[in-house]
Length: 356
Ligand code: NAI
Ligand code: MG
Image (cartoon, rainbow, N blue to C red):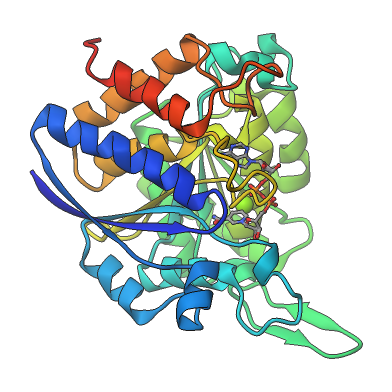
């Protein structure tokens, strides 16, 4: 098949891990006889430096016309002056909004071989298989902001329609998995959360009576996620709670560098795929970043945007096999035993062609 893929490398380790994922996609194209065309565009700090804005129009247009978008990460100390008018992260929020990417899927499936890297006891982790569905274009990240010398505010708001569509994504996903949705909110305090809970209950009752729904407050969820992670199937939550809970959930897998994500809008619309981690300025430029989260994001791209399930599984198997063989970057390896980003990528590439 032919596919146009826009690549947004971004900042910090973004270009390093994006390069790794593109290499894997190119190899898949060769193995399965596809024609993938890659087009790079600027976003984030690099776009501020080159164009004065974190999301140039040319980038938005290219993404809108693409079959799928692969993103590295944005941000870094160079652009982090709190008084700066433009910030790299605005580019990311703006592209999510422009593409209507309201559902961010973040699978968490700890791999046996990487469990030593997790601070959680191994017996709690066996069999953990969670997908967090994070609402991505509403809530406090997008609400009106005010700032005076004495005070500041960020508005959190959600419409019924915004909650309904992300709920449907979560319920559909659960239906195809183990049939359980955990909706996370703070309904004991927040009005937006009470609306969130009402809508979840109604959508569940009216449209997905076959799927079990439970509600969980976000603070106790943060605890249960570590204490009994096996109990969860699909977790659906609003933007900021999802952002925070998934960094926490990455510790189940052992490293932020292992968690991929897919950001999806209405069916048939372009999807965006990125690791859940940021630009990791502390290790940028050293060639030691873990590329697996971005490579696994590329697998999600093949699955969700191109319908290439077999190819997606080939990548997931290759990463699994690389982990099995302890092909670890520094975030996972014992000191002195780490592979570079390039070596870890090679470890995946060399296992791609191997039949299951
Ligand atoms: P971060 O996710 O960039 O890094 C947190 C820690 O995890 C660091 O110690 C880093 O070295 C490590 N880490 C992250 N990814 C890794 C990988 N692939 N391999 C090995 N280690 C990895 O979060 P942080 O430090 O809070 O933010 C840094 C910058 O990234 C900020 O400017 C932030 O705004 C931005 N950011 C961007 C995101 C995006 O582009 N989607 C998401 C989160 C943060
Ligand atoms: Mg985050």
